[in-house]
Length: 188
Image (tube, rainbow, N blue to C red; front, side, top):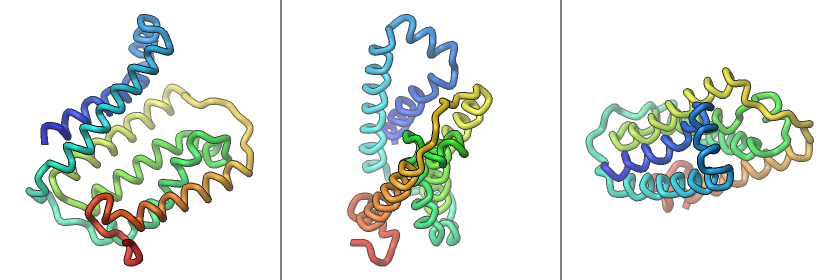
């Protein structure tokens, strides 16, 4: 469980730096923009590796709560929406223009449905941490008015929807092989 916690601290910790604009500006001023981005990427990557390895080796017990059946049933639909939001987040989409922060909303949806559909301690820790991060960062981004101006392009919305749906269906199809849990009856 220690590796999982260390990974969450590194990954989410570095992602909280932009929430505190003064801290981020200080670090960028000290290191320069390129070094800041390189350090951010390295720490994020290391944190992600520790999360994956730590989750794989963490014991499944104890169960903190029983999974919510409605969350299990809704998970495929929620994941379709989440993947579309993630795809739209870095494109000039109407989705991004309207929602402002589709990546954080997508991460929040992903974390919430997985949190409610699971119940193991390690899953509660993982998905609860990501849900808390998404909520805090979404509130921070909204209060900072952290939105870049752009002109939406409908073709990019279509690309985000198609790409997000295709990727979500692929993850659902191989979810058992990737994560040990079958999520759809047609999965392999």
